[in-house]
Length: 152
Length: 107
Image (cartoon, rainbow over all chains, first blue to last red):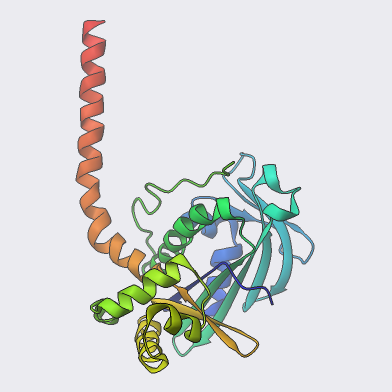
C-alpha cells in the first residue's frame, strides 16, 4: 500500500447509507461541496466534479465501489488527466460506530504543487458535509478564501 | 469540542501536530526521535490527540502512520471565527460599492 499524502477523518451522527448518498448523489453533493459529483458509479466509469452545464473541474475514474462502505476514485484536473504523475487517488471509507459514522478520506499520490490546494479544500468539504447531515443546513461561506485551481 | 481544546492546551501536543503537518504519515518512533521525547510520552500525547480526532492513523503492514487531521479545527473555525469575518467582508463590499459609486458620479 502506498503511503497516503493526507488522511482526513470526521465523525457524523448519521448512517453509512446517508454518507454514501451524500458523496454519490448529484444534487446532495452540490449542496455541501459547491460542485456536484457526477457518475454512474460503476467500476471503470468516469467521474466528474462540476457545476451544472459547465466543464468538469476535476475528473477521474471509479476504481472501487462497495456501497455504503468504500469508494475509490482517481482524481485529476482535466488539463492534467493525461499525465500519470498528476493523477492522484482518493479513498472514502465509511464505518458505522454505534450511532455515528466515521468517514475517512485518504488522498494518495498528490503531486507537490497540488498539496496545498487539496489540504485547504478537504476540511471545508468534510465539516460542511457533517453539518448538512446532522442539521440539514450547510455552513454559510464554507468555501470563502478557498480556490481550487491547477498550479504550474 | 472539549476534547479538542484540552488536547490543544499543551505545548508538546501542539509541537507534535506542527511536526505532522510538516511531514504527514510519521511513525511513533520517527516522531519520538525528531521531538526529543520518550516513545512513552509521545504515545500518550498521540492517544490524547487521536481521541480528540486531531490525528488520523493508517496501518501499513506493521507500521502505524500518523496524520494531522484538521477537520475539528476547521469546525471550530467555522463556528467561532468565520462568522466574525463576515462583517469585515461586508464592510469591504460596502467600501467597494461606495468608491465605485463615487467614480460613476464624477464620470
